[in-house]
Length: 75
Image 1 (cartoon, rainbow, N blue to C red):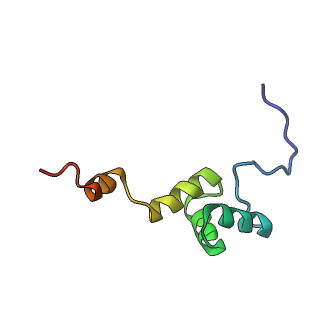
Image 2: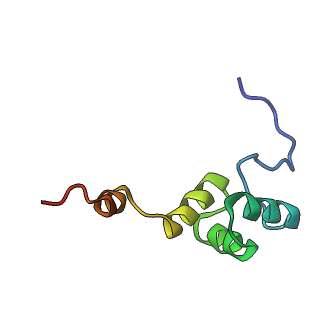
């Protein structure tokens, strides 16, 4: 059942750029700079899970890369 929300409530899964403390907390949590958070929000919106996936995508390897690094999958 949906619960009513306050008109000015911020979603738990959002990163409001107007809230410098929240930006700082998310930067710490995701191990990136505050500027990287701001840039990611500009790219994908303020949904925290989208920002996290965007940032991880720019820093991580793919499963195929890991398999290749492990030497598996080669003939």
